[in-house]
Amino acid sequence: MSDNSAIEWTDATWNPVTGCKQISPGCDHCYALTFAERFRGVSNHPYQQGFDLKLWPDRLEIPLKWKKPRMIFTNSMSDLFHKDVSDEYIQQVFEVMNKAHWHIFQVLTKRSGRLARIASSLRWTSNIWIGVSIESDRYTWRADHLRKVPAAIRFISAEPLLSPLTTLNLENIHWLISGGESGAGHRPCDPEWVRDLRDHCQRSHVAFFHKQWGGRTPKSGGRLLDGKTWDEFPSLPVHENNQATLAMLYERQNTTSILQ
Image (cartoon, rainbow, N blue to C red; front, side):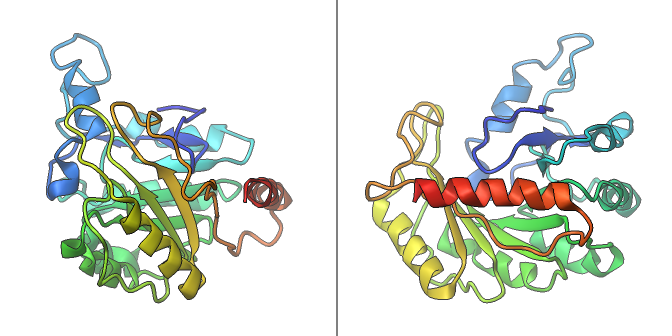
């Protein structure tokens, strides 16, 4: 949980659920698992249970106490659509996001099948962005599930990018984030894979954000692609009376134009 995240495409993180299970190769060197398991067995630590799944109902209302508009990565240390998170609890998380209309919530999942199955039962206010992780061409079908979700903004996180995404369809996708893997045993990211994604985004009028090349640490490889920093954010509908959120978005867009 952090109100000042180091992740380049967000401002804060909020974890009403922690812990997860690995389900595809992108999970092999999961930073969240590595971090959480360091504290397994440490009495009274938030990760005393390691990376075992845990619900935190006492954290549900935290975003309502943050009055300044933020982009909030929801469940950076878990997956909201994990099979052991009940539909009822997911509903509670969405109710908070619906109420906190001055924030933008960025929800990311690898469990796109469950997302698509229950999406119609959730209230998708325009401040909720929903994304799926696609680490290799074997998992581009997750974007097909994503397209079924009636969210204002749908995005893809191609991080860690482990192969070219030659079959990726960007129809009705608004944003794509690419990134290489970091940490011990990190797998290399070929610049040509990222260039192909950037060019695909440009042809498809999809905002493109290159987060990192990866390496021993997240920032060790830098972020430049062909001499430029790619920090595009999608244009989006927001609460029509929410001038503070609009101001936050304009500030980010102006920064992007300077960087590019």
